Image (tube, rainbow, N blue to C red; front, side, top):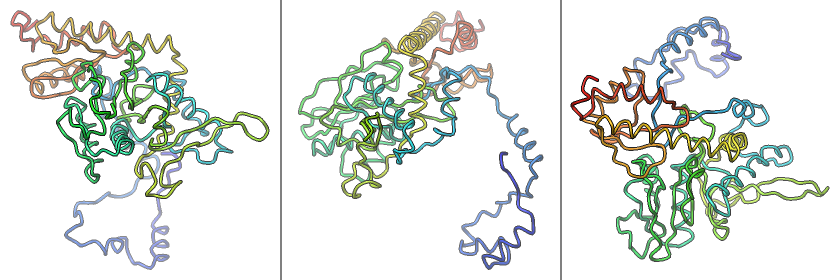
Length: 420
């Protein structure tokens, strides 16, 4: 409870007098009684010692020592301590764009290097300096394609992440862009695919048919082992690059060809020379409504995630090319080892070609996951009543895999394993 200090009764009386009301209840006079919550009672205030004790008691209700096999867009990976140490420095501790270049050279340099790293990973010419998250980046990419092509329809592969699809629908609800099922429609602004779809399967992206743009959502870590798909616009989320599951996602990034750069939402940091001949960094492209007329902005709702982009950049520099490949290889090996062992005890793994997560058939998703949780394992993400998505990253070891197999045996379709 840093800098915590509760109000005394005298403080409250003086504040009420200053704003001209008699009691705290009068603050809510403008709200109809039927719209108020009658049970909204916070109780008496705590002093600092009791507040700390109360929060510690609440924290004890959390259980944080589960083995984690969750994926579906947010994965538990190792975070080198130096990443958080650097990102927590007061010079960097902001989620927003460093507008004042003269006092933000360090942050701007990191944004520039983040863009360069993203372009190298996805094999594109230009990257923006991040948007809110991967889901909104995918939606913004569709709007970017619409501006480039002047066409009002988009085809979206049916097997993209459900959360991403919901965000896209929300974005496009108030626009005149229509989602269609016909992949051959000649009025498409774009076709949207997820390199590794919601079932963990690699997707072969088909070629263009009518000069529409190809938009691909990629798994950043998988690019250490696999070539990025050929696309006009490449989108990613950086959650796997130094962020824990408590954030839900990382920053979104949109990369594209040089000829499309002026249609990117958000900002692009550039490198230049100042009047003394020294290297300097600045916001080169600023296409938000804060910088230009609202009707000329590429997006009025994209939010920069400077701190998450900084973390991603520091993480990639810390791991280096060799370390990044090793992380991806371990994840691949662990997932395939777990899948093989599950098949050996009678389970069906749907995937033929996957990276670090796969679809597992079970008799009852709810019962299976509940049992594993009782065994201290977060066993995966429910896809439907009989399928779950299981993920294994570099944090999983052989003992963890054996724990998963042992806990799964009672639910194996192979009767020989029942009770094993």
